[in-house]
Image (cartoon, one colour):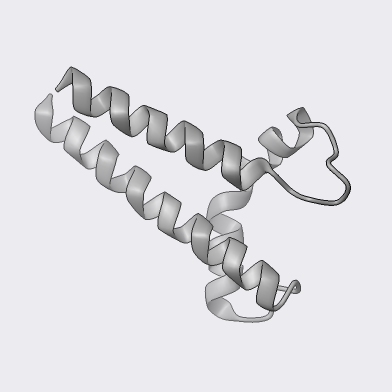
Length: 83
């Protein structure tokens, strides 16, 4: 079980890095024209879209990456404390 927990923690950290790449590229170039940006959008959008629908609108600011990252860090903390 420890190996599964470590694998999940690693996958969550990789997802957080991909999400940070998406956020940074959205500031630099809001239209996904780069291959890396498109990959980041494809990987993160299935998680961010439901969260974005659940959150209220905040004057055009998308807070869904922050909520998902906090959830990922919480899940990492839980996995580390269990195993």
